[in-house]
Image 1: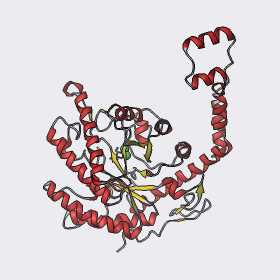
Image 2 (image 1 turned 45 degrees about the vertical axis):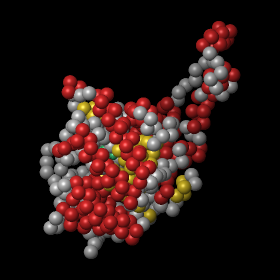
Image 3 (image 1 turned 135 degrees about the horizontal axis):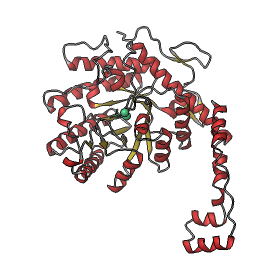
Image 4 (image 1 turned 135 degrees about the vertical axis):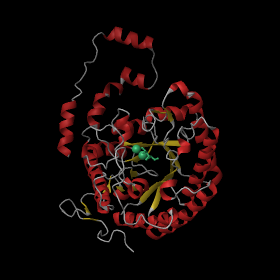
Length: 436
Ligand code: XLS
Ligand code: NI
Ligand code: NI
């Protein structure tokens, strides 16, 4: 039984190909800066958007009716969906997938029943992984859709909801471990507030940290060695999320002693919602050794919410790859397409076009970034721009070997300062265009 009978295995055909169901730039075996593209990107398909996306939005109902979404029970459909998903992922040639517990497996009447169904689905996922070689990049728990989480999960004012969330994450971690998941993600969902009049912010943030520490402890207990990832997002669904941006997440981790256990999963559309560029968020995390993985997508600057579109902008992917190549890749993280087709793109084949476009955009971005790096087109300039710190008093500043008093006598003696040099922004922007 095939769910995408008209779609062949997607092959690399090179930049001249006009075949819409072929890669023009993503060539898994091609080497960039010493790594194959397959290992450099570690592309992942997001189970929630690609296999559970319905096209509904706040103004309208589902538009994406899929032939396979039928069956006598939710469980039966969930099991069938595993076949759909793995046929898709295998044909696309993505090495990884990612899920929330509730994407792959429905909630039953009780937690006991829920976990029983989850085990059955996990068994089928494990078989499908073994059959296809597709691996689990990360798992996570959906702690935001069910009405019990209306006030959040780990930051809920209701301790029983905290406990339920803990039980859910415990199970999601165990299944992730069982499936060989290489990372485990925390995205707050509703870990934030709508109004400070009814909120004890300190208590909520303390609880979030307590929750994450318990997850770290549980990982040790079950022998899960995967990387924990914290995913920043500034708003939506709550007005103010505690995991606002990379800086806020890293500050939170350090304040609560989680920094050794947790890196970040940076998402493009979340960066822009926070008023940053993706490159900023990546560079900020990377410079602190905390860039673990990325959720590749893009927003629409004219709409202003988390539209989760597939990334096709080559400036964007080039900027991402400049940072990712600098830190030699993302492993054990990867590039997960946390992106969905538009509600007007109603055919299953649109899912293929979307992923092919995203993978090709990243491949092109990587080739362009590698060429820029090879020529030192930016790095030589940046190095020169800071060269006053390479010797003399500048070096003493960098080495922490001077003081205000010494610097004062230095400038008093020197009189005339070394002149500033041009930042050359326009020239550098022109140079980037020469590589595109
Ligand atoms: C939502 C988030 C979510 C996380 C996983 O905006 O991006 O999809 O990646 O919970
Ligand atoms: Ni995400
Ligand atoms: Ni998102």
